[in-house]
Image (cartoon, rainbow, N blue to C red):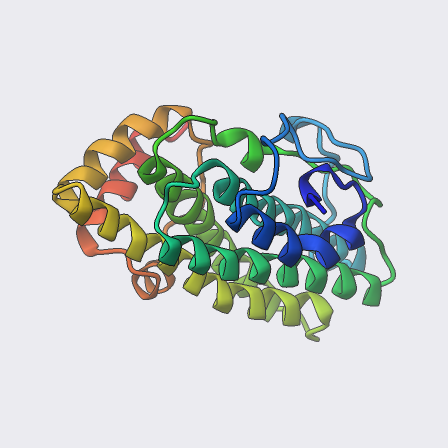
Length: 256
């Protein structure tokens, strides 16, 4: 099974581990232009307005949006396994574990949303994360974009959302899912931090110097993030103080 070509959300979950192992063996075909979906896909700016998280519908929508992000993260992991067969076996095996974890997060979002009385497909989704990466970019760029920028930005957003959820009178399925995913995503981002530095070492590059240069170059094509950096989560996920300074400088410089 190639879950990139499978539309059903539940079938994607059931098939992700098999797809990853097939990719590890080089037995999956080229990556499609876009992964299949069983619901409406729109541009990010065409997404409908959200209700606040004080409403059950607002929290369900939060889980729906998070489910879409976790699904894209899962698919991007598989995409990397397919597109970089030359990467070390250790990298690919660890990425397989991270990718399967993303599938578990996706399933958790779907189940938690159903606890609140809503379901996958009640709102449209976007493919912005998938469209951010490009076939043919270097493995170092891919690791930086997916695991340190996109997922790192997810740590910032997750910390902000959890802070808002703490202010509600009761904690329901949305809180439980967000809290677990946020804690586990720290490990996923740390995977990117460790391998980024290992790739720098293999290429005889100074990691701090390369991060500033590479991040500055890539930033022109990456989506702008409005959240303040969550320093605590980022430091746990392997970011250095100098890297956080670079990210903050870029965020302030390019603030709309």
